[in-house]
Length: 332
Image (cartoon, rainbow, N blue to C red; front, side, top):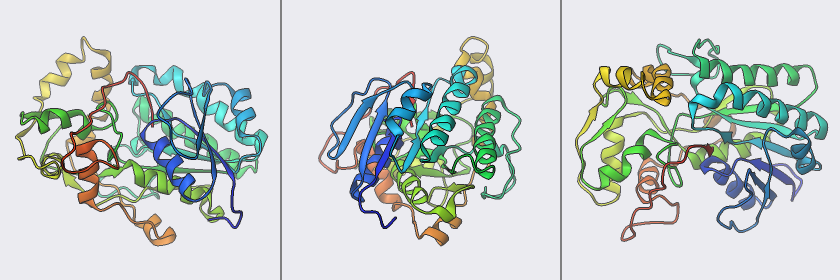
């Protein structure tokens, strides 16, 4: 951490990653402003809430003035709005970072890499051609260009599919089927349930975001959040069931024609076809760089599964699982 004892950190996006980041920063003794469109949400000790439109550069500038870092933890889950949602939001963050001098710290995904052979490392190019992937890759390319031009200071952290506490069914593929699995029902997943896949705990995303914000030597590049060794989707769901004291259930993949046919009538299903490859072959994130250079290690897998089963970081055996209802949009 910086030698400055108490700094202002502005976290925009009050979903699972934003919440995890805010808690990490408060735990380090910082002043934290958690921003969302409504400004509402459960009280978090030591965290102030404010309402703002993430596309409003003037409002973001106002809230970020005097801050050490500005965190972009915003993410719409409705894939159909990405082309219109992201450009003004991304530009607003860039403008606010340039006006205030705050470090721009962005929570992102692995889409930009596209299909790859072998584990994904930070040295891979953003070579994906899909619409959503190009949007996210373009956001980082522009931030990096402005960083290299000396206009802003920027860094990005990428994670894989989210697990852990507070993750709603719309925010993680395991979370989507957790309620049914804990009820003993057979569940279906995208792609193949028997190939290795990386899952990132949202708390580890928060830890990584806070860590790179405080380490100037990390700026100007992409980092991967500390992430456990990959497991299959079937294994992840089985482990979540066991963490809740339940027997594992059958896990099946959707028939290939299901996504194709449903995509003809349901726009979001049509959008999911772009990322179908992530579940058809091994999808492995290599987080050794951040583990080696910043000393971060992933939350133990058993704890990831326990928090995923009970829906809250503080829940445990004997408490009912809390599964959040799906939302049309979320903040990461």
